[in-house]
Length: 468
Image (tube, rainbow, N blue to C red; front, side):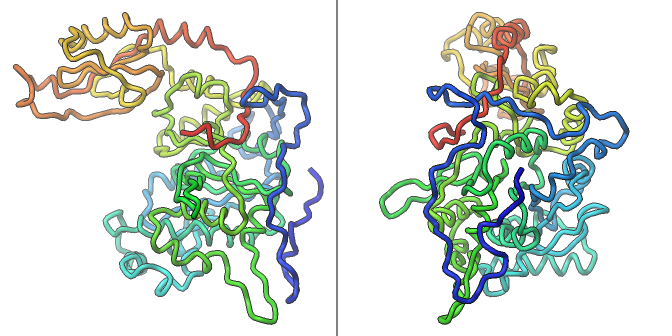
């Protein structure tokens, strides 16, 4: 990559004019000849990791730490965040990210090597936050100071929406020479190899705001303004981040910081990611460049594998639990990265889908689901549900619960579910009926995988028509 030239200097003369905020026509750097009719590019990319596989007990020896000066990682957490998740994060995802910026709602250690910064303190929280939110902010600070345990009952989640704009300001201040800024949450898993491949194909001097697009508020012409869903992470080019946080001084005074300019909007909005999309649109005329499903709102266990989630490189996962952080990290680090980016098609083998046929107390059909007609014999038993699934070409798996058969048209792990349901609603109901019993058609799954081999990765083109 060329030496970095900021979109504007870090220190601005008093009479400097604001930069031109009209977005140019954006194109990726990769100039390989591609089919314009496709919704994706099939770029040939290369890994930045030093060795194809981890060859030592320390994976950081292979990690491309030289890229960290160009790609600034910002992790958003909270004082009352789950301790097991924190442990998993620092032992896996940010284990090798020595300069990670961790933002929170108080100053506190984040694992043994990182310090979380109270990004809300920059806002004068007593007057910036809604009164009830300030109570939550103060109660957490007092409990933390007094050494009392913190938990979600203190309503620290209310503070999350206020962190989005100041975390961008802080990131640009602390690393003004970065080319890219990647923002993640404490339950976001990032496939670093794929992220580094992605940023190598786009120009950081263009204004890019990447993520998984979600619909937000409407403008004065009744057009929906889309934003990048925060849980899946979002990526800003240096151009976008610096122009967004730019505020100038001149003879008439100082133009407010972006977090001050949108203070009232934030106070009355439910969510910080939605507010960020609106602020980007209002200040820069910049809308999210949607890269779903590469930025993925699903957790690992919830990915509905299908042609929508198959040959695309995976950048992020959301709602990652500690066990998944650890297993994913170890498995990913054992891969031969020279073979190409990690695709959804690779993840299905990590989960072992197609290798087991049943799980008790498990729900695998609560996404992409459908049911036979109410008078179908499929509802008579688990075995009958299995038979009906095998007879339906659209069914890959099923769950039997409360004398009802539920089927799914995508391939998915699902998750553990405890028994539930009122037996009084059933005819001759038994306690066993309250259990969730799941099955997979392994033969059909293996055939589908075999019939859908990926010839090349599908690096999806930016779009807000292709949505979650």
